[in-house]
Image (cartoon, rainbow, N blue to C red; front, side, top):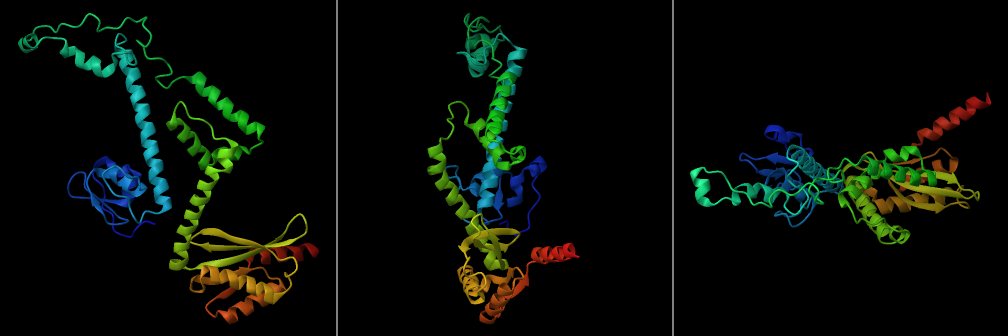
Length: 343
């Protein structure tokens, strides 16, 4: 959660960096203060990103107040920056090869040695007196030597391989009958970007990976999201919603959810086939959820307008006078439409 500390406007064009909303630029170049934990550091906005992403080993300690949302955002920015650096490097190599095709970009000499060799092969006296530099006769690599010219793959413009990758993705999509809208999901885009950064040698996860270690990490990550939401329960209060539905076996199930700060968290589901009309049992179920969330954090209970729910909610308000009951607006509209349909 972002702090309310006033933020200074960063100097020059760096204000476009998204990470500046969590930092205040200092009076000297490279100085920045984290708005989450008020830590002062040097090294500029990039060091702040590692600080907020809680990535050790970059000369700055992890931010103790960085939320899971901020950590994800900073890691995404760092991955995106790495991708841009790789693309810029490939473009520079392609442009250098086009301007001077006799120099190798991927062979045994390469750019670095090529730049150094323009002066290193001359003797000191000749260079100091302005005489022409004498080059090693093997400095220019023959054009027919493998690696003397940058390949299309090395420049990142291999359209054929890109098209093959697109077809492979579509085959997976069609074979599993996935919705086309799923391609707009932010996680799909994140997966493709992560594979691009991983590069050659990346192996696709197996079914065991998905059902084992990756599932465990996902559960841990989800628990972190829930823990972040629980902070809002204490600060802003929350609403408990009870949603009843009937499954394929004609059993009545009750879902209990907690809403706060524009987000909803699932708590549990209970089979209430035999107790759905028992107001006291419903009240005890609701009370159990209230105790789990915290009586001081609950503002209201939202339930449908069935007689048992109305009675259970009134009983719960008698137990906890600070909690109110609100009828479900969707259920009210449903009943109105049913009555209109009967006319």
